[in-house]
Length: 104
Image 1 (cartoon, rainbow, N blue to C red):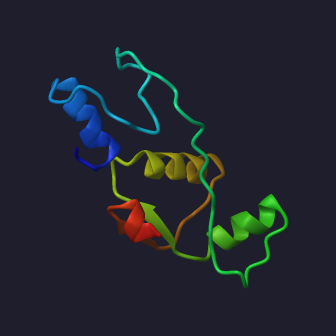
Image 2 (cartoon, one colour):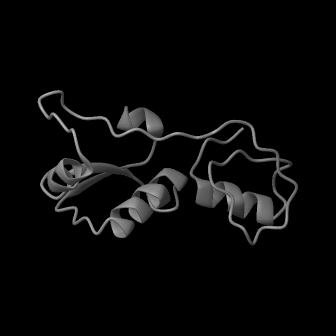
């Protein structure tokens, strides 16, 4: 068993190095048999001193504070980047970590 990011899992499947892989986001162009196991929800977690009531307050906050990102190739990172781009948010600083345990 190898615990790694989505990019490496998909590469291993493509090269037929593994029998199965577990990822949160499967590219639509991959021709594989898949089984949806659970819904994958992501939550924004932060310091309790910030009280966020509206989407606009959230956007203002995200434009000011650094965020912790997973490494490039991670499904979590891709979802975060899509959200940031879609909502036209500027992230001034970010910290990049390579595992969920490090993020926790």
